[in-house]
Length: 88
Image (cartoon, rainbow, N blue to C red; front, side, top):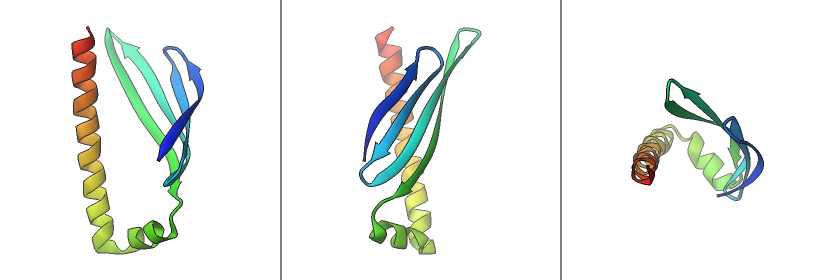
């Protein structure tokens, strides 16, 4: 899937539209407290592929998709952290 930034308020949020395999909107909330930055990701998306929607409803594969999503998010977090730490 791809995203398009539709709104950006510095030090507040970034809003995106997703299209392709996923369709919907997402918002990244940015907060800073006591010198620590935090980004929270909120998505409201759905699958566009009828096959993926059907497969996602099958319980054994749902667990596999969920585990894969968790793995991808951990990897993304690790890579973003390394990029931020190396940028300073």
